[in-house]
Structures are given as structure tokens and as C-alpha cells.
Length: 182
Image (spheres, rainbow, N blue to C red):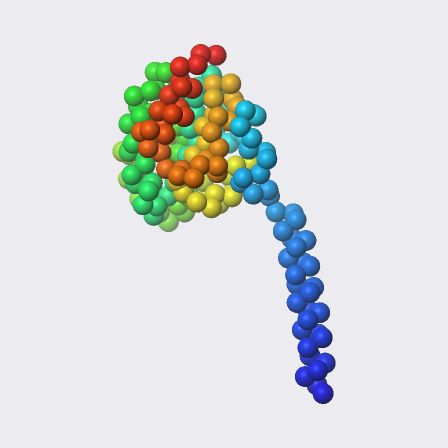
């Protein structure tokens, strides 16, 4: 008889836990692929806190084409993508290209992040959390977003099925934006 009383209590407890989980989920930030990242709409602001103690906000880069990229030292595709992106960024800096690179690594990997950053032509900083403001929770890397000279989102990395940069993707997505003058 005691076990029959336990079953309803267990079921009731599960139902309450599910209800609490649903309520908690309703208050979480919107997922990264939410409608607030719409192509042609103003890009969400984000600030890179660089490894050397500086700050660069996307809002300060109006008139530039900006690639906001998220990566990590433990990410294999990032090791291929970052040198390519660095070379492209250096070659197109005079045309107004800026890259802000956010590492998902924690402070314990700072030496590794600094070693990778030393080889790059653009500023790097630690994200400090899996949440990147209105870009959402960064759940895969690499992932990048492109902001046009007008401050509008030109490429949403969450919608890219193959998100790592290649020469072809850079030529298709970024190069045309560089030829547009504000």
C-alpha cells in the first residue's frame, strides 16, 4: 500500500518540476536564431574587451564593414579559419574592413588565446560568457556575423549551414560590401 501512495506523489513532483522548468525557460534570453537578428535590420551592438585592456564597440565602427567572429582555441575549424580571416582582413583594411574576434575560452586558457591572437591582424578578446548579448548564446564555433557600413546585419552566421569562413564565402559575402561606399 505505501508504494501506491508514492506513485501519485512522484508523478505530481515530476509535473511540478516540468512546470517550473517551463516557466524558467520562458524567462531565458531569446535563442541566437531569434528574429532580432534579421538581415537588413540594425545589427545588435557588442563590445570587444581586448586582451590589451582596450574596448571596441561596433557602434564606434560606423562606416566600416565589420565581421564579428566567435571562436575558441579548442575548435579545430577555428585554427583553419582564423589565419585565412586574418590575411583577408589585412588585405582589405584600407577598404574599411574591421574584424572583432571573441574567444569563448576562459581565463585559464589566456596564454593559448594570446598565442593565437599574436598571429592575427585584428583585435581579440575573451567573451567571458556563452551569452553574446542579442547575438544569443554562442553554442557553436566558429560562427560570425557581418555588419554593413550602414550598421545593418548583412550576414547572420546562425543561418549559415557551413559557418567557417572560406575564401569563396569571404568573396561572396564581404567583398561586395567593401565596394559599397556610404
